[in-house]
Image (cartoon, one colour):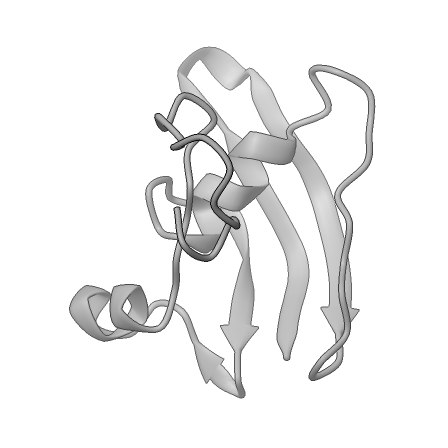
Length: 95
């Protein structure tokens, strides 16, 4: 389960990359991020993997704050970047 509460990301100079977002997904629920280009989908994913810091708000995954030890968080989280070189026909899991 992932809970996002009032998550906001603002870059230097006051550019708001992610407007305040609140969302709760239940265990085994599939969530799709479908928005227009420039809406901040990759920014949200980078925050969830702790590649970015939020300006405000918090996130829990599995009932724990993601702000705990980075190594522990990353051992339970995965992220595949857009430019990642995928291999031919294998499944996403295999790649």
